[in-house]
Image 1: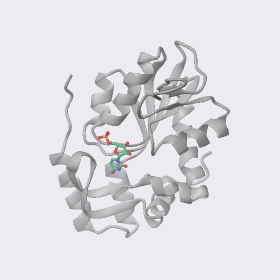
Image 2 (image 1 turned 135 degrees about the horizontal axis):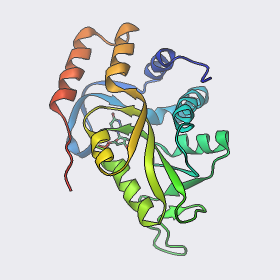
Image 3 (image 1 turned 45 degrees about the vertical axis):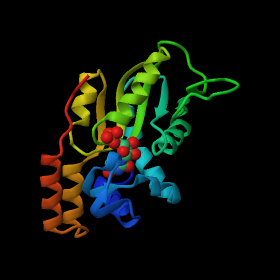
Length: 206
Ligand SMILES: O=c1ccn([C@@H]2O[C@H](COP(=O)(O)O)[C@@H](O)[C@H]2O)c(=O)[nH]1
């Protein structure tokens, strides 16, 4: 049992300010009519717990020994999941530490352990793929990721082509539908977002 419907949770996310609407600058200067700022959740412990329960629900179907959150936004999610499920966690640094331990992964792990990646939002899949590449280079196995939101812009396909299956709590389509039904976003905004998702797709390239 996760204790709360996805509909109720989506509205609480919106009301907490996790959904920004307008002409917003996203990663690498891209423009988007909708941006999900799930970093605000650290200020809402009950919301954090509710989101993590949903992620744990997805994670329980996936065999794994260890968790790793993609820095920085997903680190708190991975930490809460780790404590809730008594599953060890590792932390990927953005850059290798330049002194003392000179590590890129913090925490204790063994080669061939199955690492489940935790991420907040997937757009192109680039951030998640970078984490996967680093973790695999350290000898761990990565075949799955659990994410709060798949923006349905091609990232999940890019990751699949790289051997990572993505399971998401929400897709952009169902989240927008829920928020529209709850009166939080207008029909016009929903249409603008739908057009943006169709037009702004990321493909697989090596
Ligand atoms: O609505 C959004 C979209 C993206 N993010 C952040 O960007 C990366 C995901 O983008 P990729 O292109 O898949 O790398 C992710 O780490 C998010 O933190 C966001 O917060 N909100």
